Length: 308
Image (cartoon, rainbow, N blue to C red; front, side, top):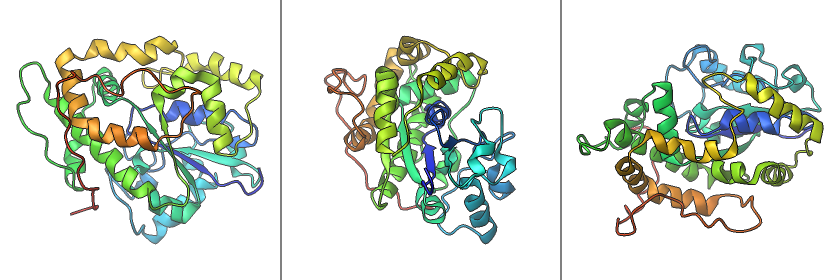
């Protein structure tokens, strides 16, 4: 593992980045600091207090650049937290540092340029993300991404469709569209499906490990991770059964909301599906979205060009 590039696990918040990063960090020669370096919310790090919301870093300030290099080498103690895995080992030169940071999603090229990280973009069904936001009492940070170039959500989507559904569709699409456009210009990057990882279990994770050149996790370590999964909180419920993770989110949305969000995000979801690393031996039979057969698809838009 000597000299192994760090791995950045990123994606829209509530997409499973903490779970995936912790899972990857169960293998030998890996370590994961627990805090999200660019997350400015709550007790997260906010890049040392230099950012206060969603940002598209293209030319980081000198202090930000120094912090990013330290973080991705495992040398920044302020990024340690209860959700980390072998955090102190991350500072050793023979350890691959695993970083999870949804707020790095709009700044992947700058992070890669400064740290040499291999980005892993994890995407989840936007309806599931919306349901998770509702469970937490959160709303999509749509005002912040509109300031960065996202379209303004339409008001009044109908009596059976909440305004937060429209906002989530804009938020989710803009973040993933921006990330996909950025990944195309990088020498190495990986896109993976949350659904495929959950369906495939250990076998799917093993495919991803091999792709990232990470050693396999011993069976005891995998079992230990599952036992410790019950130590999560309401924020991170790691110990749920597969079917609950895959399907329970539907009970928090109406049929109309599932169709509406799927319609607005379908073009982006199709691009993610095309770019993803296959993790299962056979193609999935399920359709990528929950759309009525007669509902038209929005045409893809040009990739976002950054701040206006």
